[in-house]
Image (cartoon, rainbow, N blue to C red; front, side, top):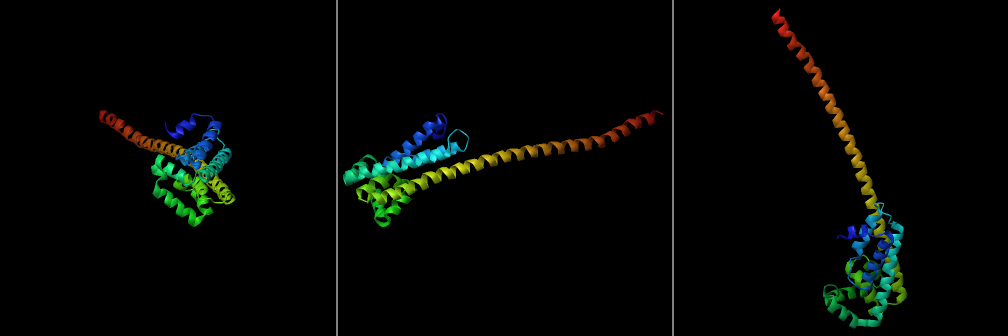
Length: 216
């Protein structure tokens, strides 16, 4: 079953919980499709399904911030052995090359890596645990984490909601335009038929009159 279809089949409260949980687990360091879930739910909210976009954005932000914070705590406690263990379990996401790339980003950008990492799939999974492993001061991590979570989760929800609403309005207008065009075509066809009928009637009268004259 497609993500959108599954979300359509559950109550709004469950949608909020699923979005917060999946994004939280992804932020904690588990490779899950958090962005896909958020986009699908935000699109639902634009279709009058009972899903409130403000509540949805708040739940997504909370999941992102809490998940990243838990990931930070796990990374700080587990250290590099944790990254090695994750590399064995999820080599496609936590391979040595990916870890090295993420480390270089953190060493170069610091707090900005946490902030902008929220918008990049790979760094979104790494941000919390890696910040903990590298012993980034928690207050710096928390500021970047909260701001990144608000901008990413809230911004994504707002943009998708707006796009969905505009698309719906456009489709409605398009349907009205189509109806108007159909009406105009119908009226035009009626006028053409009437004009042809008017031309045919005199010809029929002349044709009927000719035999009468011949008989006389």
